[in-house]
Image 1 (tube, rainbow, N blue to C red):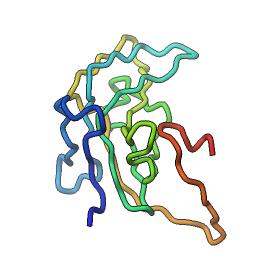
Image 2 (cartoon, rainbow, N blue to C red):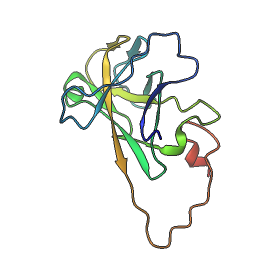
Image 3 (cartoon, rainbow, N blue to C red):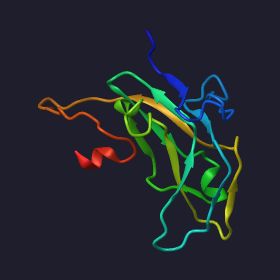
Length: 152
């Protein structure tokens, strides 16, 4: 039985995407690479974050989620995750709108545009368990991809 892991997302199979690895045996996070070249413009008020594709999807157990987190060196380079951390639920995997392809959403707070090249490590994924409260009655079923739980 598969428990948790990474796969190449639909449409990215022939784009030389590398499956994530941990750098050291005690590392919590799996290093994630950019799937293509992206320019992150210098931040201006009102600007939307830049989405960096990974070409990946991840699966985990129903009582788990995975966190998209910045690297510790990210902020000093100007990379700031738009949502501080990304929380990706287990039912995001293979959803009908984007197959579970996850992206990193960054702002650039440096004084110049930042160039991300395909293969650059842009963040990390950490898998986690979660708990329910006693009277939890969630029954909803995911119908879409990025931001879709805002619609339930």
